Length: 607
Image (cartoon, rainbow, N blue to C red; front, side):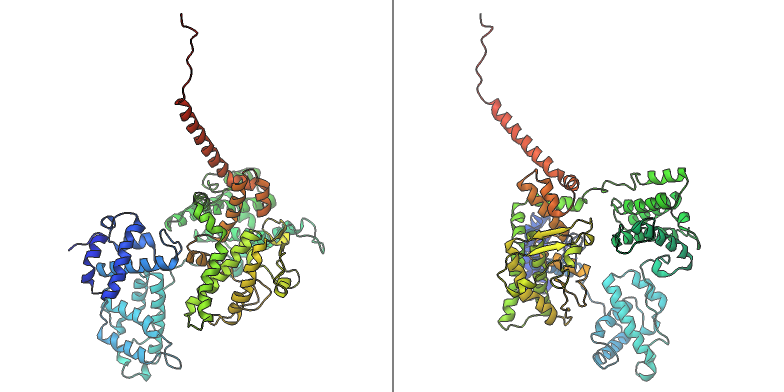
């Protein structure tokens, strides 16, 4: 019987050998697919590859309708995928060879604390044994060349497991003379790990210490010093004109150019900066970047290329004194359609599409207002179990702590100031110069006024942020300081206690929470309550709310976001266009109604 759709899968389900109680759950998930796909089961293909392409694997990054939580979507996806795998034969196990079974038994007996091999070594060694058995290889026949060939075709997770399995294999090889019962099964020498798939690093980075790059980076440092302090020597106490973030961006652009030229073998040691930043070299780097992006299936319509080229052209034209014709060619290069794509100077398409969909979804707008409370409720359900003395899995408690952090982030963004992620992550709650001083709130929970004050030198565009938070922020902060932050510090579910530093969002060191961890905590917690939003999108939500109440409040939106009014008008002009379109539709409806009205005739020409 050839099974081509999910209706046939449901009918064939009893033949797949699942227990009756579990089969009932699988059948419910299959039937749920009709609601998910918005069509009949007969029209849904029963193809594992197509299912994986549409719904993904691993971590959930988007919760589709009609699911109301990531857990429910994850369960539905797991059940359907399980059945499709069994139908496709993908779950058929590969029988180990006799010699591999002997080694695997030894691994199981000699793994764990104080033994030759680490805990759970049989899992990763099993990947090596299974892969070799499928190829018909005995343990003694494993070679470096075979490892490299087979590793290329493995997924990232399987490749990592293979590397760990080889490490266990080599640990046994090192002890082969002490294992007479296994000595004849093991190769004479260690097996090399597979060659890394990632491209070779850029040896011209400043940190790489390439001798030929010294002149380039020395000249770059001189230019940056001039941009920071002007032409004169820096004066003590004088304000810095060029920020550290800008210096980092210019260095990244120079690294980009050097890396591209190195990949094309067009760079020689001892070259100076004027010989590197030329029109010909920039064209080469642009073509190299475009070719590499297209080979990886990535879009080339991003602002990245324009940013790199603009910075490098500015350095060349302003500080390196190129010939007039060369300088003119460099300036024109910034405006080429390939470099200055449609995305330059505009909101990115994914963000614009997201906020436009938000505009059309009143239910999501309502949920955004109560997002902090929804996240708190998500965390409280788990914390209530802990208070009741119930045993919790570490993952379950970590999800609750993640939701607590996200609730606080959302409350600050929506009820104090929609600051950028970098400023929010580094907020200090106590100590000298604290941007969000909560010492008074910790002493007396009745205090209502909370002030968020971030100096301009810490903000991307240099604008000072000074806001009084709304009254309903205090309860969320109080709950976070009492229930969530102490658990991160003294009761971390994975025994990785955070440090009780001055930062509102601490980390395992005395520094603020790591950037990737901070963003991931917020995104994953929001997905758990079926609200797909990043911290940057929360800024767009705040601007949308202001302009939806008052279409002319451009200056108020700009003041809240701490950006200039022209930027707000540029990014949110689509709201005016949509309102104009709606007004136009209303006038068309009015015109249609007017056509049907009775009009008195004219009798001027009656004889």
